[in-house]
Length: 138
Image (cartoon, rainbow, N blue to C red):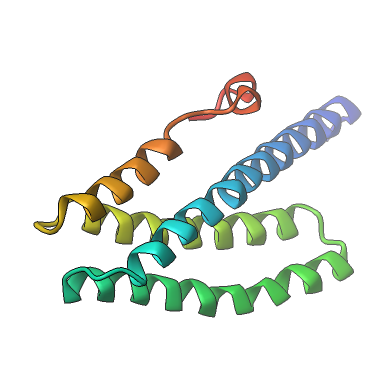
């Protein structure tokens, strides 16, 4: 393998690492919004299935928060893109759990107030910040 080929592979790895880091940051910024909506819903007086959906999602997110210890481990190991992939994967899983619970609530046959809160939260996720638009993510 030539020096140019190695440099190109390194450039592609760095580019992929930057993309993973950016996507992880986006997910990390949106997750507290989802968590707040789920916490608000879980404390309301809604139908039992709505409360259960919100509480199960929150419990699962709390469990996954325990995996954040892995981030510290990978940072200490300084394993670069492996650390980024781990953080990105964990952030994706957390966001998928929150989004699924909110979608279930938003699409359910329940009180319009709770549906509106869930729908507004989900709709907010599709709005890109200026940085996200610049980076070309959706």
